[in-house]
Length: 82
Image (cartoon, rainbow, N blue to C red; front, side):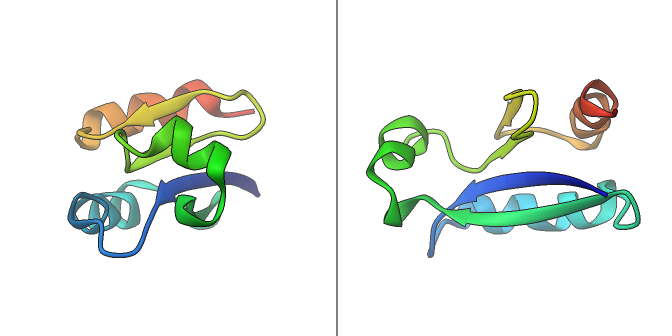
């Protein structure tokens, strides 16, 4: 199973919009999405505060910034597949 991270924080309305798209667009038998609250890490805040939600592949360091649609999500998933 491949791990992806969604950079987010509490009260992020854009993150709330991205979650259903992730649920419908990512195969849970192949991928696990870890929600990472950037509020607790100064480095993550500096990097993502104005960009969240951001879906990140920790292995390749590729990222997909919001706004994205189902097609863009699918292309991202294909690009990070092992």
